[in-house]
Length: 218
Image 1 (spheres, one colour):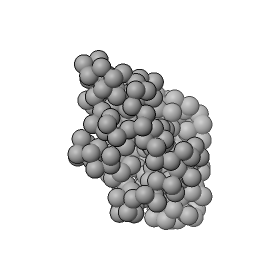
Image 2 (image 1 turned 45 degrees about the vertical axis):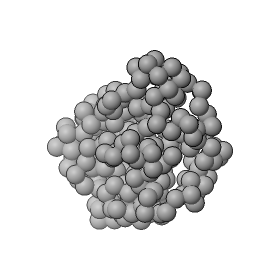
Image 3 (image 1 turned 90 degrees about the vertical axis):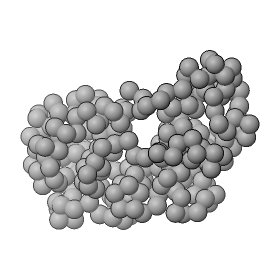
Image 4 (image 1 turned 180 degrees about the vertical axis):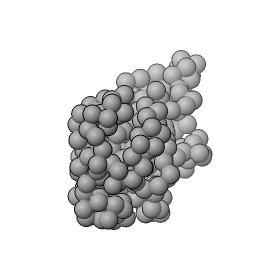
């Protein structure tokens, strides 16, 4: 199934725009409860104004809230970013650490965010268990676990470590474009014949094809 999906999405990648570990870390924190497209719409302004951890730590809260407001939960996110900037400056000289055990100690950073940063900014393999990934691996029968950490370990045991980051991208792409939460496009799915959950969604090929998204969900 993984090989077939990799063939369907050969260009699967992190859909957050970033140029360095700091930008990816901030963007990932902002991506909670919103889309990558929405985050990408505000990060150019955010990074122009606060280009590094030192600038972020010293940000004016009102100005920061105004910039991140379109991503939702802007007060909580602004609070997390201010604390994140301060922690990076105080503990790591303003640099984003490249180890999981360090990243998860930062404000607003859990294993999911840490694995996104490690896999895409540092080249350290990691499995990103977001809502799409968790939904798909349970539908596929790869694991019955619900807890994200248990899902991460269960799926990680099925694949070589070097494949973890790309596997995450591939499944997230499929979850965003075809295997939707409410109406999966089963009739347009390349792994339908192998999927134990086939029939959960629309099976008619034409109707299913109409549900497939060709770009990042907005």
